[in-house]
Amino acid sequence: MSTLAFQPEVGSLILPFALLAPILAAFLIVFIPKEEGKTIKLVAAIGTLTSLLLSLYVFFAYDRSLAGMQFALTIPLVPDIGVNLAFGVDGISIPMMLLTNLIGFTAVYSSWNIDKRPKEFFVLLLILISGVMGTFIATDLFIFFLFYEIVVIPIYIMVIIWGSSKRVTKEYAGMKLTIYLLIGSALLLVAMVSLWVNATNQLAAMGQGPTFMFADLAKLEFDQNFQIFCFGLLTLGFGSLISMFPFHSWSPDGYAGAPTAVSMIHAGVLKKIGGYGLIRLGLMVFPLGAKFWAPVIAILAVINVLYAAFIALAQKDLKYVVGYSSVSHMGYVLIAVAALNLTSINGAVAMMFAHGVMSALFFSMIGFIYEKTHTRNIADLGGLAHQMPRLAAGFLIAGMAGLGLPGTVNFIGEFTIFIGTVKALPVHAVIGIAGIIFTAVYSLRLIANVLFGPRRKEWDHLQDLRGPELVPLVVLVFVIFVTGMFPNTVLQLIDTGVQSSGLAKVLEAVSQAKIGGLF
Image 1 (cartoon, rainbow, N blue to C red):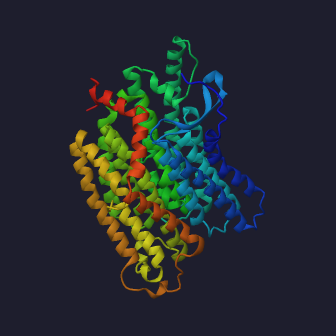
Image 2: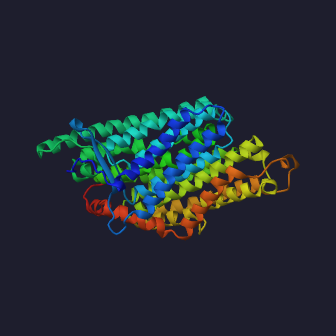
Image 3: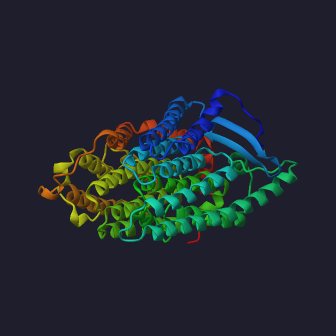
């Protein structure tokens, strides 16, 4: 199994530095007087910018020809049970790490006008960003789970203090969100403990000690029934996080009640932990379980796509429209996972990255609209493009990306998913493609009702985005178009991750395995 050794090379310290930069910024903010709001925000911006720059370095410095896990650091933490403080990234985790820091950096600027307890707000926001990032760079299952648990508390506190109360109270939204996440984590804990016990028994028979390392666990062979049991728990746990039907209802309510930054992080990256976990842990360690449950996931995924799209058509609140849109888009990721082939998995990771950027831009623009107009009711809005053309441009681009317009980042992810899915699940693929029609309907109607129409005098006093408010617009729009027009910059990286992780071989073996699904 893996050698547990500290690696002092400079490259191995990049990931811990990226992880600690927001934590260090949060620590410094603690000692800044609460009256110094501008200084607090500046420190938060520097902390997230540092992590973003380190993520960009990792993205471009990663050796695609060598592939595999790079920038690795492993420090024994609790050797008796096999826990290691282990970090590393490959072609699957790098896009997620970069996405986290892109959204974290822009979330700070989307919250630039926060004046209610800014000190506490930005401390919690920075902890949340580090927690999410930790799940994507952890190569030890225990550390992965630890970081996942870290993110729950900041989210709850931020929703109930800085959230908004419209359709539901912020207390209700915060509690509902937290309960769903904790139930999901409880199911994941059962699966993790069961996995550790089984793996430890196997390793003891080989004269080796226990481990939580993903790579080591993937090398072991588990009984078919055990795989079915564990993957079922993972489907429920990660499925609730990714808003899989029928465990989706917390998501729109949570978005509606949350402050803008939390909505951006929740829709942009927190949901992606569910998809990432199903791929990194579920498919790699329990491939036979994945094949057994794939038909169930495929059916629920199709329901995700169509049901959420229909519900989005009926919403009157901006955040609820984008919230149900997010649920619908995650259905495509689940379909790709259920297809169990190389192309679909590549598309799933690409889609998670694309949707994260798009949804973050959407929620950022909605946050600014609410901040300036004090309403999210679609019927009360209209003609905002006359007074706020820059905000309108951001809102429009987010909408176009959401419906998968060619040249935007979402297009290649959706297209790759459909190519991969049609091979294994042709009926589900056709239904999923049909879901794009409904996406176009609610997206275009939303854009028309909010941005266009006659000029409304009651909005003439509104100021367009300016200064720090422009940062989320510029950064996220840049990513949407650059990765949309040059998709291979991300797709090639993802493919190296899928290939080098051994997932391609696993998927090939699963396709030939003599095990039927539930249906």
